[in-house]
Image 1 (cartoon, rainbow, N blue to C red):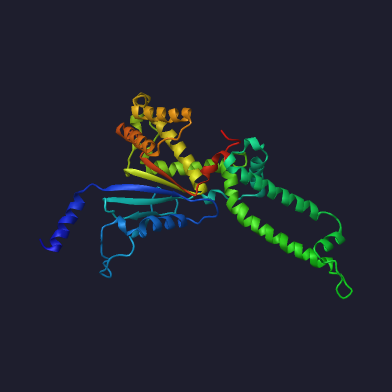
Image 2 (cartoon, rainbow, N blue to C red):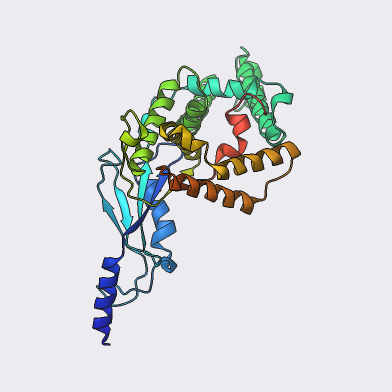
Length: 364
């Protein structure tokens, strides 16, 4: 058969196949992030530069093998923001297309002040050593040492002795019969103070300030945490195809799933945001599910018993067995008509490793 004829047959076969699609939701980390920056870098790393994902194809412009896999940016109502776009791909070698979304929340975390950071740091420091997990004890001691140094330096700087300061800095020796003027010292300390203030404003407030506000459920932060979670749950449920959840019964709800699989990726503080979104979204959808059906889930009961057994015994769970049992539970849900198709939660540089220190008051 001529080559062109083969291509036409193959094209016709691809058209007859049902379209398979998956979605990836990327959640950026702390700091003053710009819309789409994290998503574009992520797509470039996992799709554009991985030529093993697609079959050998030629670039129609130059007639040679493509160096990168192409993507297309498209507006999409799921994002509910004109700053964001959906990035979509062609089919990979398994016949699956991927839509990438970014959950952007940096604009909801503006106006951070020293008061927000102070409340959070106080909660971390003002606890007894017995309430600090062993794996973060060194960090806790470093924080206390830094606090002591800053406090001591501040107190020392308030000592009203011009001669003391000049001599400590080596400026009290006579030069041509004159002492170094005190104005020069004040100017020097002013420059140092301005540099410290600028660095603190850039690093502590703009970056760690996000952590201080999101992980601490103080009255100053509750409204921001609520806004971020609401928007994240809204995006996830829209991607899952939950169009109308206002019906009185489960059968009245309207689901229009477009994806057979959804993956959630959280970077840095975004992994904590992602965890909260997944937790609240699943709870909301699960409440809509018929209670009678929930009792008919032997896979779920087996997983719960498996986890409890290892917790009671104090042993590590076999990772591959645990993952397989999770997959079995998801398949069980889908077979019963549940709309939840989130298969993976991927974290990158996640502070959840130290959740008991950053989020909790003590080690559980």
